[in-house]
Image (cartoon, rainbow, N blue to C red; front, side, top):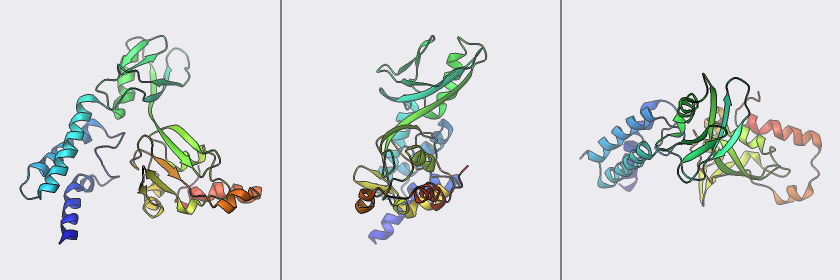
Length: 258
């Protein structure tokens, strides 16, 4: 009976996901747009108000609805968040990394502060294009909201600030690819003490080319390639084998190297 109740709850709350026919739509996903959030809000509110579900299911629907309402009201950006910005006008510009200030503005060189209050991550580029157009005629604006994650078991382990629309395999390769002694066949993603994605769960999503955002990664999550201590100490991996590992990670996850 307990298992049946759990399944009913999961199915009720997965309804918005199943209707989309695409990658799971979770109200905490970073790059979800306003229209999708509004649809999800209506669906979770329907679950919360329905007498056909248990109290537990209705409460969870209510909690997710409140998450969405807060995002729609306040936007996604908080003090300390970082964005990558490129502005092209009369001459080619250069990428710049900006930090969101406590008043939820970013200081754009020569243009001054631009507010991000109430702006979703998915609206960032359109919002900045509109704001920059007040100063520059017909600007070309490219903007990415960045997230900070750690990548371990790679040649250059550590914290990385990356665009949320970056595919997972590209993120691993930007960190130098698998380290000597690492086991790419056991890659996983962790949040705190929990395993967010096991390698079995990752196989199909990454083969589809899903991004960090589509995999649901958030600030502080860890991408981990477990390391065999004996292999790590040896440090004598032949160059040809090391190069093969760089190729095998994307191939193992079903992604063709471009």
